[in-house]
Length: 212
Image (cartoon, rainbow, N blue to C red; front, top):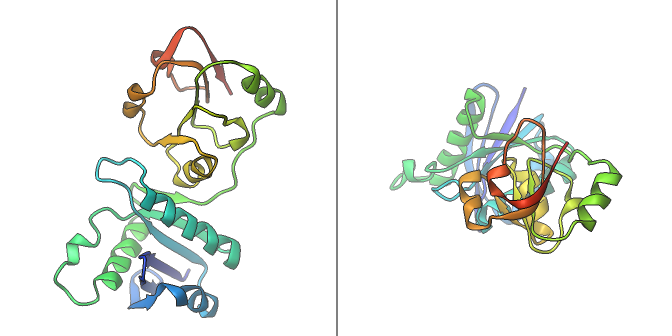
């Protein structure tokens, strides 16, 4: 399996290509990255994704995800995202920092530790549930659900998968990755979540939880 790992940047992208280890490491202008990817014979693309140091989503996070989504749509390849926090700082003061950061992203993916996410299609919620949630008044929390049809004004989303978080962000929702930040927005009048998750502590007395 051949892999290309990319350290996404505003002007330049670091690139690392290989199989089990990076065999080529270099930097390319961002304007040329798709031209390069179309020429490469790779099965998997890995993009470094930036989170804040606290682990929250940021504008930079969603810029990285948008870039990864564009790759998937253009190349029709498997696209993964890897938490790249501190990858650039490891190589400060060295030549080809972007390329070395891409190599670090490559190695994190190969190691298959935490912080690896794949871009996959959202899982739809049954239409009657969507309609029921839309009719329920008050403040809404959507937790661990990927169907953006549920979102509405004054909606907060708890979503660990960056791609799904990005889709809700594009709809104007506020998205958190970690439930410890939900206290800032609670209480909620209705919570839509998956079975096995308990978010009732964020529910307003008399509020409703919809478990899927």
